[in-house]
Amino acid sequence: MSDRTPERGEIALRDKWKLEDIYPSQEAWEADYKKAGELLAAFPAYEGRLGSLETLREALRAATEIERLGESLYTYARMKRDEDNRKDEYQALSERAQSLLVQAETAAAFVQPELLAQPTGYIGQAAAAPGFEDYRVQLNEIERQRPHTLSAAEERLVAMTGDMGAAPDTIFSMLSDADMKFPQVPGEDGKPVELTHSSYIPLMMSRNRDVRRAAFAGMYETHKAFSATIPAIYSASVKADVFYARAAKHESALAARLFPDAVPQDVYSGLIGTVHRHVDKLGRYMTRKGEQIGVSDMGMEDVYVPAVEGFDIKLPFDEAYALMVDCLKPLGADYQATLRKAREERWIDVYENAGKSSGAYSWGTYDSHPFVLMNYHPSLDSLLTIAHEMGHSMHTYYSNAAQPYTTAGYSLFVAEVASTTNECLVLMELMERYKDDKKAQAYLIAQLLENFRTTVFRQTMFAEFERDAHAMAERGEPLTAESLNAVYAALNARYYPTLRQNELIAYEWMRIPHFYRAFYVYKYATGFSAAMALASGIRREGAPAVERYRKFLSLGCSLHPIDLLKVAGVDMSDPASVETALGEFDRLVDRYLELTEG
Image: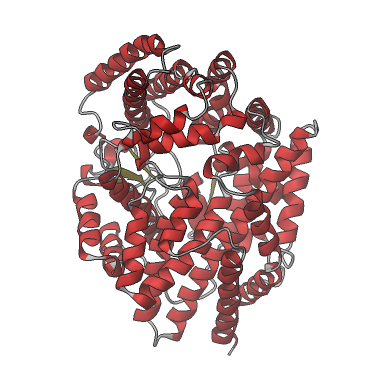
């Protein structure tokens, strides 16, 4: 591990994404910004005239063009900011684009109330009329939104709060990625190395407990030092969620966030209840890990250590990428060809640099190809991360190719399915290739168990924290470091009952950026459950399962998420789907114990 994070200028061009594929120059961005402003200025002329089908069609086309421009402007600006959060010019560009999106939402706020004020049946008539094919889903969704739609003036007022509502996420990102400074900690050789968001997990995977403890303490003591600031930021975010839910006449913030995907609250609560029933088996697995790594008092600082020694896949990025492509052969030669094109055409920003946003994501615009942000370190975990993010990108690629702009975007509920299916397919193929190697089998099963732990158990714990924090706010209870730490510490103890509970773990919630996009993380858990079923079916059935899956990838948001997954062959409205996945977890734990205890 390098003791210094490189500056962006030191990264090879091949390893940096080519955002010029969105805008070739700053001037091109400014031209679209100006065009969007002009369209926005003209849009109010449609107000009061939507009772005419011809005018309605024109208004929907204009609104779509504004949205499409705004998406490109914001995506480019935010991704440029993510390259180096220290650069003021891209912070400013991102803020301008975000403000434009708020202006667009404000300008269009009259559309839904005005349509709902038309005579009964008008929206259905419009949806069935020639020339409205691209807007049929949108119009039907407006009708579904009827109970939660305010007057035009009220909707406009709520839309005008968009910048304020987005502020907590922006403030936390600036604090976490730009202003927060972490200490240097001892590395494997005892020499100090820089602790960053990206280096934290590799340090926590060290077999040297002193390294792990130093990284753990460095991460959470730093967050503890912001025990006034971060809870205040998060409290503002939660209160914004509660405000928007109440303004739209939803019974709770949770109900408001589930409504757009038409996901019943039973799916959310059922996930938590099902996971609770399998916590004991997770505890058995963690106990065995402690025995393997030689700690009798296994704590939260030990959970990331690979328990099986002597096997890993630590490849340079290009070799890891080629291996991933080969493992995804069941999805088709054209799928593989697009993956290779993505690397050659610089869709991927590979390595960490100073100021770069942490983690990994896939993003892009309808008018460009997808892009992937990585912070790659050679390991099986990073190999699976690029498989995960390219799963998102391929979902976007196929959806954009098959759908008009208005139905190309897809819900986060299904997004995690495509990404995790890729991960599972890679792991399953590696397990097949190393089937005669007992140590490799144990290592790969451990990786799959870790995916269950981090994607199903951990994300469900996060989902439970979000549910409890929002419920506290809805009851008028204060959200402080003391109250939120108490909730998080209790949940951590419940999900990891066999581990020593280091008091610093109570501060872990403070570093989770997903909490500023409320009630999102549960989709990782449901997505993983669906992905396990899909990957198993693809490898078992072959062509029929691949055909269903590829159809699913091309449907965008033309159906509600649960109905989309039914096309792929999985019914997430049935609690048995998650129970089946966790049953496989239990069997994998038993197999792991058999391999490692014998």
